[in-house]
Image (tube, rainbow, N blue to C red; front, side, top):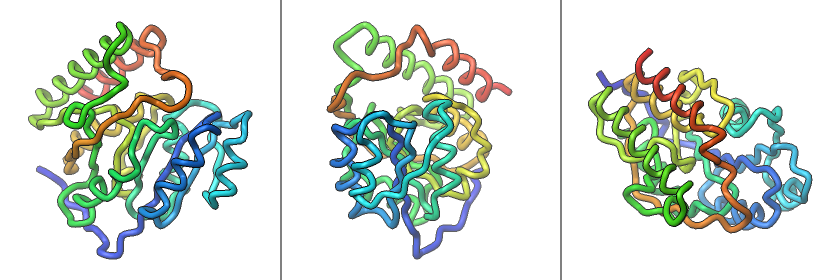
Length: 233
């Protein structure tokens, strides 16, 4: 049975950006999310460049993570945010801030508790063209197939970092993953707990600076372990 969590008609939106050494893109991201946010939060991974200086100029509220990875930074964001709707967006320019209104709308009208931006519906520039990207996309399909089969839902993307969630729901999920498996964990735990999870089509653009930090040979075992752990137990 789906849980129904009341939504405040006067919803406040905290946009949370997790970043480390993203000085080339962070200013543009923070500028573009402001029109859609009640507060803008940067969770900084102890950047060695000018990421924090730029964020200060953009009047973002800055907190530090504890150096354990993106998942741990997401948990810091959940704890520190004051809004009742939390939006997570990557700092590398791969997400379009203009998608934020469509992400939060299903929550604001009381239809969803977690809304994921789906790359499978909206397309991606980062899942095609190399063996690593092909394997990432293939693994993503297997993961989502398992979730759909296990819980009787129909989702297309469990791992995209662009998402919106009610703060009270995020707090109740007891998230524990320290790396990028946090998104997979959040999706599975929300579905398993009976919260309403939906998707909107969003496009993932080629990151504007550097290369993806996700290398399958380093993280595939953790993804497999957490997938089975939260799926079956």
